[in-house]
Amino acid sequence: MKIYLVGGAIRNSLLKLPVQDRDWVVVGSTPKDLIKKGFKQVGKDFPVFLHPKTFEEYALARTEKKLAFGHKGFSTNFSKNITLHDDLFRRDLTINAIAQDKHGNFIDPCNGLQDIKLRLLRHVSQSFKEDPLRVLRVARFASQLSHLGFRVDKSTMKLMQEVVKTGEISSLTSHRVWNETKKALISYSPHVYFCILKQCNALSILFPELNFLYNIKEKHFYFKNNNLGDHFLFSLSNFSKNYKEFDIRFAFLCQFFIYYCYFFNFKEKFKESKDILHLVKNMCIRLNIPIFIRKLSYIVSNNYFFLHNIFLMSSLDIVLLFNKIDIWRIPSRIIKIGILSEYCIFFYKCKYNCYRYNIKNFLKIIFLLLNSISIKWIIKNGFKGYLIKKELIRLRVLLLDIYRLKVFLIK
Image (cartoon, rainbow, N blue to C red):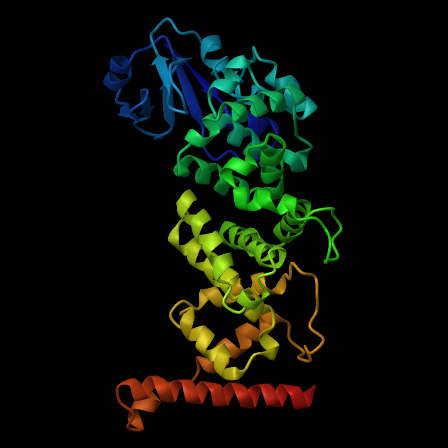
């Protein structure tokens, strides 16, 4: 039995990136042998074992054979006769097909070391196109490594386009799509992920809402790009330089659906933004997005114009909005909403914005101000039932009016 370190740990080590997990491949062994040594078996599709002390994953060397449509249509062979080279040649990219023995020697039959030097994302073999998930994996690796100069090889991009043509990309589960998308969203260059998906024609299948932006040409707005799709990638790139949290990045992405209303001249519906919210909900449900990300995306999308023109809104409307989005119970939302509202994708500045604070600071200040009103004090003054809420709203509106008048006079 021989054990080798494989995959991402070697790649990241060579690129001087953080190594989070180490994966091992076992050659010349069986599940019974590993279980006798105290390893715990996990996984249904093929045997993966957890080390009894380190809990790192050890997988038997295996080969795969395509039998049916989709990501799971494979049969797996993990017999003792499978060699290390057999296992490495079934992998997706050459930079992930490098092994290292216990003495530190590299086993690199696919020239992954050379591709790391060339900063190239290249497929190992023609079997690459048998698994549609690899299209997303390449796009994700491109987003994670583009800041180091990595690019997708032309021949690999061609294979990715062939995979999309087969229609197998639509067989991927929402869990698989979101898992790769989430990893891309927390990468250095999340916009590259969507750019690669566009180049291989997968964006129209996985993210049709975003792909439609490429159909909206520059006409009435001042953009640096020819269409809204390129403008979207440009904006996401800039936004991601300052904000790393993937929930904020995803919600920022959803804000671009506001252009649908402008494109179809739904100007009368801007106040409620029902059409925008409908698009966001459809995408979140289809991808099975976590609830906490959905809620933030719903809030900023449904209240886009309100938030970006908040200085013009009445104090009553602001207080009612805070009640509606449950900001009092989840105060952490106010910072994220403020961040998203600061970045105006229409690139305009309200000429009536006479306040010394930007939107983010304004929201933070008025939240702290309005949250200072004590409900206990209201109850002590004899208010009961629904009258408590009514009086709380009245006092908050009054306090906000006084504050805004004071700031205006100072200005």
